[in-house]
Length: 270
Ligand SMILES: [Zn+2]
Image (cartoon, rainbow, N blue to C red; front, side):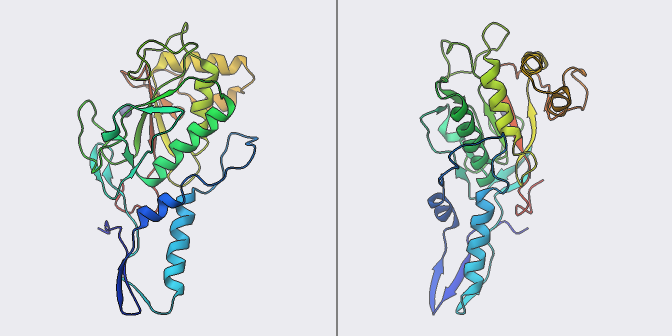
């Protein structure tokens, strides 16, 4: 298993230990395009570009001996795994991290979360603060209240409401036809789904079937094609069906659980 992330190499007789995570932080939040016309962010996650550039730079130097490539954060499966060399979601003005001790993920996961939230608030700048639930503990593994969330690829995200409910975003709040802001919540969902074809992008979203129905009906009424909705939602095919990326799960009527794919350079990720 090639789990060790820190690259160890010798430069002109000086032993140097690189710190890829610190490098990655320096590249966080580059300038975004002035306007995002569509729902899709740029095709390749920036962490992939960062890693490629780092490895090229190391290989390109004549006096460098490359002993170990930088790779591997998510190890094992979401329900039987762990996280190493984690990336932490930084605090933000537009969201509240409910439990900072559980705000660790793979770099790709954290990048996509930040991007989806950024895209949503760009479209809905006056929206209330968003609740961020558990991602993973710093070293991953089992945490209370979850079976998954073990390997840095699961993120619980709150929803948007017509009026910010009492207790939110410190707690998740049950969504129904009266309180759910379907426009903003659908935008949030679409902003996550925009990464579905990217390396390490969204794999699945778990959301209560009745909440799916509210979003589906709203989207259909607002010009989203039935064909597109068919790709997104399990609704109306039934709670057990394997249609769509968004699937019913009990106890998910007050938040969405977004699961990300294994990044291609996380070779121990399952
Ligand atoms: Zn969850």
